[in-house]
View 1 (cartoon, rainbow, N blue to C red):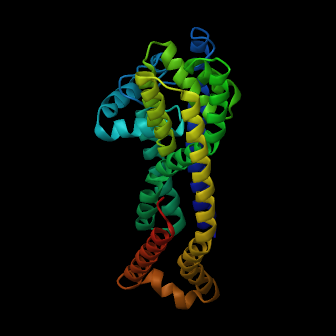
View 2 (view 1 turned 45 degrees about the vertical axis):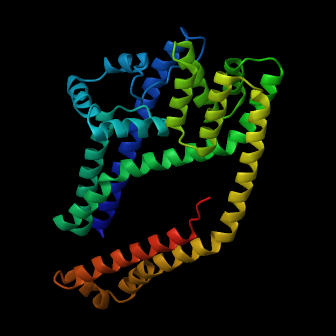
View 3 (view 1 turned 30 degrees about the vertical axis):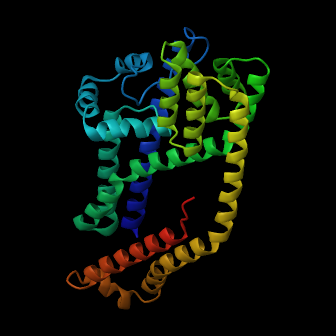
Length: 328
């Protein structure tokens, strides 16, 4: 019992440590960006995560890092996975360098290995939990990306309405974006503030919108960017175009909701069928540990059976989710 408590405590300690690192780094770089914003019309500079954009906030933050951390970041940033991580961190709005993100992988894996070794009283169990712990930072970043993208897409129709009203009031495209940055909620306000900031720093409007699309990979936003770029090249009534796009996006959101309702039963059934064997195994292990203990104690037959069972459960869950996940 003591080993179980120690293992659980170790796992919680790893999660708290990872969360603390993210919080401290975000707060520290937030102060730097706030200082930089005084020189660029009150808008903060948040231009990390994309090739061709060297943010002054990154340069200031680099002086605070240790020599080892800077060398690690320089070694990883130019690699393929390093560039991919930079984009993912920018999409999740996490103010971490590539080196810090890599260090989080190592810390999470080491902590999960120690917790698993204490929990299962065997290095093999620690190795399994260590592999799972390696992916904890990635799951966290992916979750943050999904939350921000979902929030941005949900706010996009109202954003376009505000944009249309600003254009019809006589505002320019950049001035209307400034109004969106002031009036819209997060994350829309943050992203449009970045666009305005980039334009004020001398980046072309088209490139700034492409950077926005890179941070928010949304098909609806791609349609908006295309409309704005075409209007800048050939002219036309941008307000009417954006209003029409806004109506289309609202209809798409309504259709998404209807499809989600119709497929909700299938998704719930899939999760229930997938999780039922796991909970049933745990229940039988608690009720009759001597009967189910053979699966854990017998490494020749029990462990392969558990591995095959988990693999088949995962495959079935993936198939069910693929069936109910309708592309539109």
